[in-house]
Length: 215
Image (cartoon, rainbow, N blue to C red):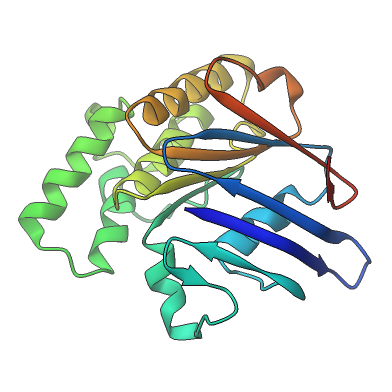
């Protein structure tokens, strides 16, 4: 489903990745751990093709980085759910509209759009706050809105880049339980984190990256 083959990529600072190969399979929960600056976010950017490798190639479903044309990148990203540490919500829109926006840009029919938005908001426990502006929500609730937005397109994998980095311990626990629930229902999860205390549990796989190399 997601494969990185012998990837190398370097920034002007010299940081990046060297000869990294990894895979995430359907239904898996994979942790990508390592200190800040180790290359975790770079791996995720390569998967959603925000950047392209200098050497090696990335395969996501039927998309191959070596053959990828710019106009196909939005099609790739529709197959991915992506959440970030800083939420990246639209604060001039309601919770409902933040989630609906993903389907609006793909031309979803109004009836189907409403059905799917309400379903994912219920899944993350925010149905009662669908008309609120996310700026009035707690950090944990805002991250749940971001997760709902990532799920509404029914992705093949959820990419989570330090999703609990800005949250307190209680909200962190809630988000981790939610990610596990999503995974149990069948969606693969690839989570990058520097917090080793979050890592563990049954059916999980752990990959460690340091100084741009997979250990």
